[in-house]
Length: 106
Image 1 (cartoon, rainbow, N blue to C red):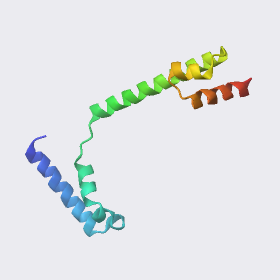
Image 2 (image 1 turned 90 degrees about the vertical axis):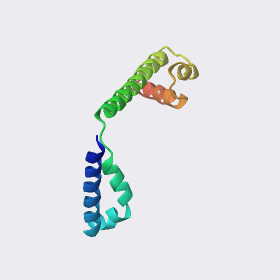
Image 3 (image 1 turned 180 degrees about the vertical axis):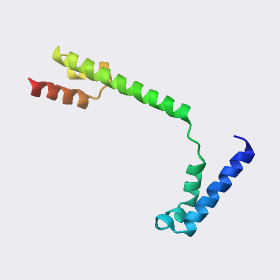
Image 4 (image 1 turned 90 degrees about the horizontal axis):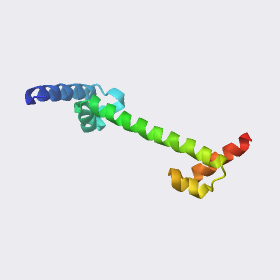
């Protein structure tokens, strides 16, 4: 974004925030948090960064699901909980929780 366009945007946001302050919108929220509102308004949404973060979140969720699936299989084969925790990376509390769930289903 070129500097002139950025300044136009900043001027427009400053004007809008000043107007909101003068109107006492949101019971003075804009007046009390003017710098934050302006900064957030100036921050551009980055679709590429958003998509990357969502992919990373999905990858992590997928890893956790696989660890739970592996834990259940190992519990069914009577592996020790501490070994399962070490192998899968799940906390011992999570392994024991899954073990209780399996026991309750039996």
